[in-house]
Image (cartoon, rainbow, N blue to C red; front, side):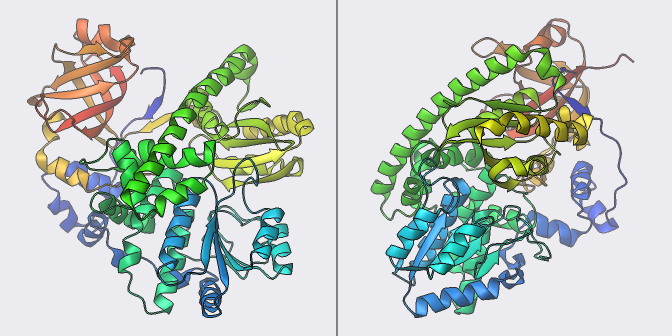
Length: 579
């Protein structure tokens, strides 16, 4: 092993698939195995999985309070009341606001949108903002990707004659806000079939229900699924059920006729003219939309996403791209500072199961990213705090399988506010409470986290030989897209491969290995890349020893090179056991 991670060795699993499905993939057994691992047992289920259909979307009225939400929206439009569409400043919130505002604007003009700034109003809805809405004559607020814990604020709004429809997907408390309707598939008692929608996904379901109630065809609404796909990828919600259907069709839209704002970002990212994938959204499109809310104002992201002119959209996209450049510089600087602090803790950090770190001068918009970086680097749940508005404000990020929401919740009496879900939480507390919060957070993590959750795990889906990397196999493998939690990109192991003799070190510091590999089942040379694994180079290249590789399969960007259609992204290397 590399020493950086452990992988769970592949074991043969009983194939709970019927004979017809087994026969369909008789010449490609690993595909049947991958389907079985996803609970797909029949040809009909395989067809639905390989060809996600909008016809399989759930009835939006299965969501509790949907009828109340639609009735209130219809009444507001009938009375010509002022409607405000309100959302969080991250990707999920801004795409949700853009979708709902842009869709309703087709039918109603007395509507506006509002995104709070991270530095003035802060997360969620604030009392001063409600006063502003009351003064502007707002009668209905559709709040997206937040609001589920705004009990006091929504009660205050009600006293001012303002109704709220909440469209949220964060974990609710026992006591709910006095909104006219709460749309949240995580509500206790909810039987909605897809409980892990993004905030934008919940907004989409409201628009579906609105269209249904008014006899409006879904055509225009389905044309906005690119926004939902961006939210699903950026918010890392499970890529299963309805989410996978919306992501699949949203990606098709991104690749054919995308939203003008998204088109501008794609052009700025040099993605024009190539197939857009979920990875492109996660690493290129999403961070730019997010940078607006992190560095300046999330409203600028919505302005971009509702733009009706490509030149205007491109100008707005360039400004947001600059925010992203600034964000990267700050991200690098703060991560280095945090890492230096943690390295100075030495053995004290080694003995801890979690990380809590505070610096009052850090940029509030970057600490969520820094928390993610520290979690990846140390593989421990991490909380990063800074000072904002007189409170220590921060973000918590978790490792695979550990519920960080419960960990933060265990110290809720020390907090001024918090919210989120299993792997990401936002929180604020008084500065003097940080030491006690740190102690109790660590105590909860130490008591509840499993030892295996403190080491990266790579679970292998199937064992392959190079002779099985056939065009048929690769064609079927592409049908597993789009990938994400619950439908992760399959991880394979191939044993006793050899360096063809042409592998070499690459990278600025020669830290990566560009691999050219063979095994004894095929005469083909297969390309691969092993990032940050240069310590294996002498053994596998100069020593010419057989080794096992764990990898995912990527489409090659160099179609004329050996192994033309694929490249292996190697996650781990282990010298083969001697026979």
